[in-house]
Length: 276
Image (tube, rainbow, N blue to C red; front, side, top):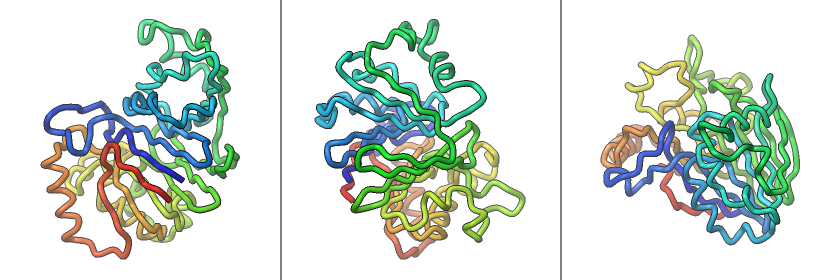
């Protein structure tokens, strides 16, 4: 399984001289195995998937965790949607309104000049909840997680490895904070024993105190979540748009000084490639 991170920011793209090192595009991950291509979320980072050699297969599957703007704002600029020869599958969380209707609100004037119904690709939409499904070599589980939405996370497995993707998540939400019994812990069944977990780490502890209920995690809670679920490696993503490269360095250095967990953890960097 080959994983490339193309978007690391939450909320809004933050591109400029102060964010060059970590990157400023919003959530998008490219996952490839045996010629099959998954695109996890469609933030502004999806523009880089346009150049992927993995598109030559003629099919791409886009897995959306939820439909907040920072996770779909790049969708209208994804070239395969405008290619009649491409087979595009979009998977997203079920809700009261259909996925087609909800995405159609974005793909329509005045927000976007092209209507969803006019996209020339071979388009199929899939509504998922607490589901299990197969895409090529990938066995995928989706589960609802604690974030306004509805929002789901993904557990992606092939013959070699398991990748858990939970980019927007507040596991510590509740009167007593983070549950330490994993059966009560949001997202734990997705992350349990994963070879790699990419998880929300938007806030510092002090920032989180003023943002409880917003649906995001402190960086310390994210590391504790990874420890409780026994993951082998953690990548912290969904960086706050106000966190410059300098600030992220400070936050991460402080985190390393405080914690001695037995697994490696790091901050997501745009362009980072991981082979599992």
